[in-house]
Length: 151
Picture 1 (tube, helix red, strand yellow):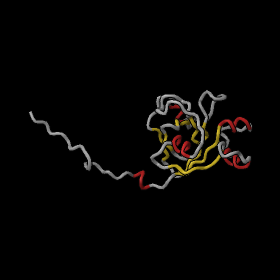
Picture 2 (tube, rainbow, N blue to C red):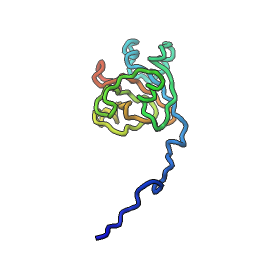
Picture 3 (cartoon, rainbow, N blue to C red):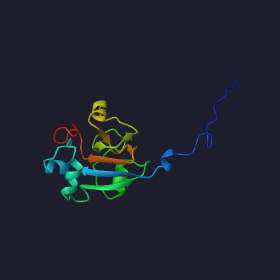
Picture 4 (cartoon, rainbow, N blue to C red):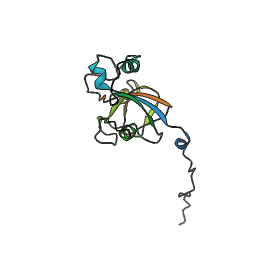
């Protein structure tokens, strides 16, 4: 019996990667602990403006460039930022962030409910990559942290 299989191997698929053609995204970050410390609310529309005015330290608030094929967590670490993490595979929620603006997609998610992702904007930074040119995230925002981040 002869079975014809599709050609699979180097050069048989489009080797060009759209992510390679896109410039790095700009990621503005804010530590959830700073939000709590200053009595702000994650749902505030002017949250990042308040953070800029408060002149927080670089570890609490700032902006970095992030490659489109790199996760938010790895990019933060490459910039000497210490964000909470544990599993690095989308199975825990230690690296959870609230996506305040922009678009980012997770490769995998075994820790957050659909409601937490869709309605509250939570993302696991260990498996999350930027889709839009600009993003704003509040990191260290595990769903159990001080109530209900993102909603």
